[in-house]
Amino acid sequence: MHKLKTLTKINTMEKQKSNIIQFGLIFVVSIFIISCDQKKENNELNVEVDITILEKEIESRLREYEKNLKNGDSIALGNMYMKNAEIIPSTVGRENITKAFGSYIRDSITGSSFNTTQLWGDDQLLVEEGVGTWSHANGTVVGSGRYLLVWKKDDGKWKILRDTWFPDKKK
Image (cartoon, rainbow, N blue to C red; front, side, top):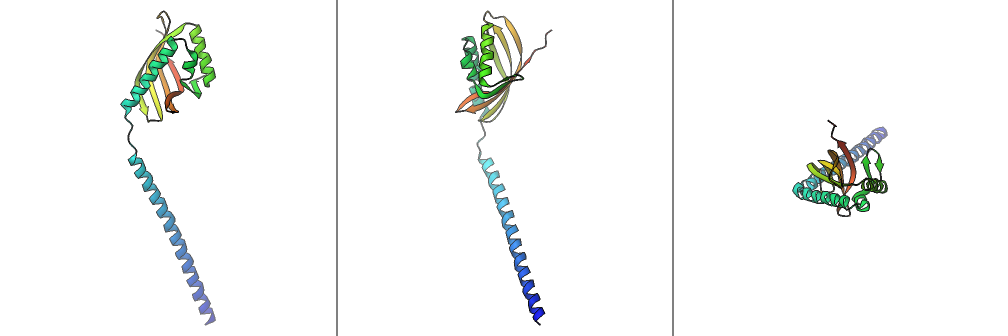
C-alpha cells in the first residue's frame, strides 16, 4: 500500500511536471507566433517608397557632382562620399577619394555627364546604374562608360558609399 501511494505520488508529480513543460512549450510557441505576426503586420504597415521622388533626389546629387567637378572643387566632390566610401577597385576612404579628384582636376578633367538608367532600393540605401562621360575643360571626351553607385543616407543627405566605373571598350 505504501508503494502504491508512493507510485501514485510520483505519477502525479510527473504529470504536473509534464503539464508544466507542455504549458511552457505552448507559451514559447505562442510568443514566437505572435511576434512573427507582429513583424508581418509591421512590414505591411511600412509605406512603400515613391521611387520617382528618390530619382529626383539622386538626379539633383548628380548635377551637384558635375558642378563640383566643373568648378574644380575636389573637397566638395570628396564630401559627396561617405567617410568609409570606396571607389572600387582601389581608392578607399573619403580622404583618398578627394586626392584622386584633385589629380583629375589638375589634369584638366573637369567635365562630366551622368545619366541614371536604373535605380532601386529604399529611402536609406539606393543602387544606381547609369552611363556617363568624363571630359577635359575644352570638351574633349577622355572616357565614357557605365557606372554603378551605392548611395546611402547620411544625416538626411544622399552620399556615395560605393562607386565603380566600367569604361566602354575601345573600338
